[in-house]
Image (cartoon, rainbow, N blue to C red; front, side):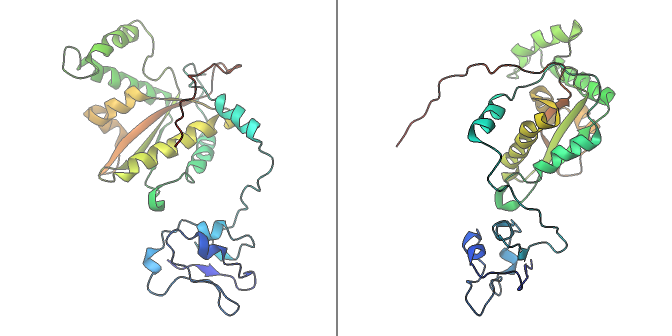
Amino acid sequence: MAITIQSDQCTRCGICSKVCPMGILTPVDAQNLPGLLPGFESYCISCGQCEAFCNPGAIVVKPGHQIQKAWDGTGITPSGLSLYLKSRRSIRQFKSDPVSRETILDILDVCRYAASGANGQPVEWLVIHNPQEVRCVADLTIEWMRSLVNSDHPMSLLVSGLLEGWDAGADVICRGAPNLLIAHIEENNQMAYIDGIIAMTHFDIAAPVFGVGTCWAGFVAMASKSYDPIKKLFDLPEGRIPLYALMVGYPLYKPSNIPERKKLPVTWH
């Protein structure tokens, strides 16, 4: 990886060398600009820390990248952010209209910046945008549940009530959501499991700003890991597996209040 230093903008503050997590940027002095230590180019993980903390914008990690100024620390108050995050709710009643592809892509663009181990960015996305196909996923998840009845599967005692609800006409799987979002990762990348949940949480938290509701689709996630018909429907690339799923849609109702939670359990050392 090559890092471009624009000498006419560099102030030689040395911050880039200090924030590099790999410690591979050379120290700065009056005569020398920062740069990668010779022979250590392959150790660069393209995390962008040097670029992010360069106030004059003198460092470019990826050629052709248009530098976008980061949040300047103003406009978002602790109380405002706290209120927003506490107001986040799982949505289980959706309007029938699908969320536009453009809106979903805008939210997923936020997820590109989620933290990932060694900046691996291992998460890829499957968006089921056709509501009929979402319904098909729900049907297949119910099929999977029927196969668990009277088995030694941990879910066997729970599925009977869900199956009764489904047979009575209630969508207990996808809750009528018009869209479904599936994060998928490389099967043998253990670090990607956590990275994927972090990225999906970004989607879950960002979605309300776009007028979109979400709910974690745990039953779909469980079924997709073992039920071949769902694996076939997802048709993921070889070597990739579904990590988890989110129901996505425009909320039929919007929350007005914040309910209480358990008291905060904290131990100090």
